[in-house]
Length: 318
Ligand code: PYC
Image (cartoon, rainbow, N blue to C red; front, top):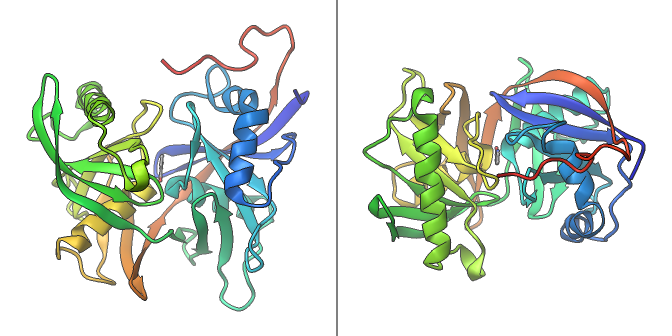
């Protein structure tokens, strides 16, 4: 255990990110996937201590900065949450970039003004725009399977798409509950049941990859949005932002259905009423999502880990 860990907290369109800036021993490994595995094997107690209660809460996504692994990249990042590690995290990347700017460590490539950051699922990019918003370039995303049916106890047959947006998603629409904050408990219960049913019925992403996010879509409440979502995250919390990887998966599915053209904007409203603007570009046969959103610094904290503290390693997610 280190004596303390220094973090910068921010939120991206409502969803918190906690960037570890000092105190956490550097991860071992030559690839970001190896570094993520090393975190889990040797320092999982620190993941729990940093993001779980009583120092954090179920919605916090942590980010550990590392040196890059690719020659053209400026940094690496491993994202983690209350139950484990994420492949990519869109809101988290926007928070990381805002944190680097805040610390004076923003170091874009001189040629194109973009930063390239390695993640366990590929290299992503970001630029800071004149108004302070951050535009990220995600990993290639795609709709893996359309119109997949799952039998959900208490709900019945639910049909949706399985898509990759840097994490695995099941995307569907339900007639109820309504997509608003007053119904968060019901929305959480329904999406948890869908997730459990997907697991029980062996419905996965490519190569048997576990689907760990469920995204409900519906009409927007805002007049300046094209759709609204509710996203259940792996640890049982809901995303307060429109979810960067979820918006990427959504756009990939719209594209696969001929409902979104390359370069056309998709304005995704979240359950809290915040918004990301996204669009797709093509790179050969691959489709690349771009997401623009805002993040705000909310604090800088030194976390202590008293050896006598019975909750030094956090309180496990329920
Ligand atoms: O923005 O990609 C995202 C994300 C994933 C989980 C929470 N936020």
